[in-house]
Length: 289
Ligand SMILES: Cc1cc2nc3c(=O)[nH]c(=O)nc-3n(C[C@H](O)[C@H](O)[C@H](O)COP(=O)(O)O)c2cc1C
Image 1 (cartoon, rainbow, N blue to C red):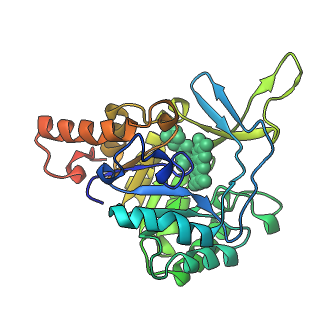
Image 2 (image 1 turned 60 degrees about the vertical axis):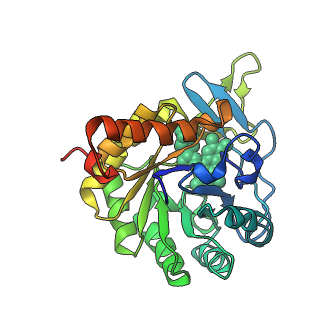
């Protein structure tokens, strides 16, 4: 990455959708919307709701599938010379491995990011990323399937994130992405029913920011691999907080929906902060534990 700023998966399509508003070449990388092997239809509407300090979404991982990403999405990013981090998911460890393998060939991803916050069909629907043994099996399978840099995107709704960070590192992850959304719910009180058709969704945006900063702080003390910090970044200062907590790169997500140029403002703001404080590398920004 030419700079430490990317966009969070699922908030920026496959990059091209934003090209009219953002010079994509100024981003450190584009992180693509999550794909599994086959096209995924996603959940019924309504599947997005604005809440007081963020956004609830239950998109249900709608996506065109790994081959469409390979053939239609990635060539555009490669032609621009922007690294593509491909976010992937599956219904089993084998599917994660298959998607990772598919995207690792000629013209494929520059890095793979595992979304482990999706339901494990064989595990009664609990997310892969909330059981250390299941997480280990997914990371191990993906690791065996690709030599690309492998990011594991951790779930925030776990009692001790360091356990999951160490499992991912131990199974060969090259980096951690922290954090995914937090399970949450909105109720329409007049109709007396859940607002989202899926009933529950994932909370992102400013409400998530201090929670994610703490998770990055804890994980940074537990592992040696680098951390991509995300959750509620709106201003450059929000991003610098993640760097202070021990991340060495950041991703801007929900804020893209309000202002697609947020990530570019974060690139400039981090640079200005580093100049003001005399930092030569983002690594120097981390606060010692
Ligand atoms: C509409 C929407 C779709 C998302 N889709 C994905 C996805 O496909 N894969 C994934 O790992 N995370 C997904 N996320 C989570 C984001 O990548 C990010 O981790 C989270 O939203 C926190 O960052 P933010 O508060 O800046 O949005 C999605 C988030 C939103 C709001």
